[in-house]
Image (cartoon, rainbow, N blue to C red):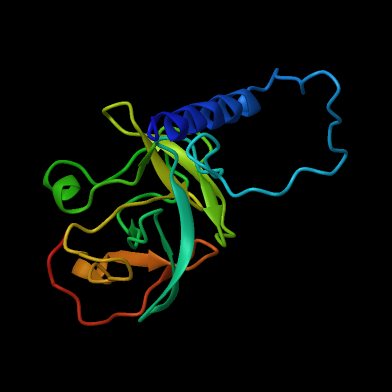
Length: 181
């Protein structure tokens, strides 16, 4: 008999909790409702924090050995390619180049940027995907960057460069891996 009372009490509390979560539940007759403002809550799984849409690339600015540079949502440094045409509608990086320099892809025609002051846009890849651009430069990742903040693609081949927040290439040559196109 002793175990029945706690089980019934837990069941009763669960029912009250479920009823209290229902958006259409009204207080029982005769009970007053509180006029207090609801407390601020932190986002939960039911109410996630506002994040970019799936596939949307949120660029941001991160400090590196080269100063503040533009990075992707994962903190990986993005690069521009001198062989591209600024403001063009295609990328000059094709074939094996794309294996080493994958494009920054989004599903949104309007990618977002925090701290990025240059103009963001997109171009269409030959596969029909949207490649992110900054000030008209198509953006790429370097396959040898292993961690956020790495800038090992800087000056590769003398034609790959990180970008500052305004979208201008930082053309400081530093010891690079020497790989590239």
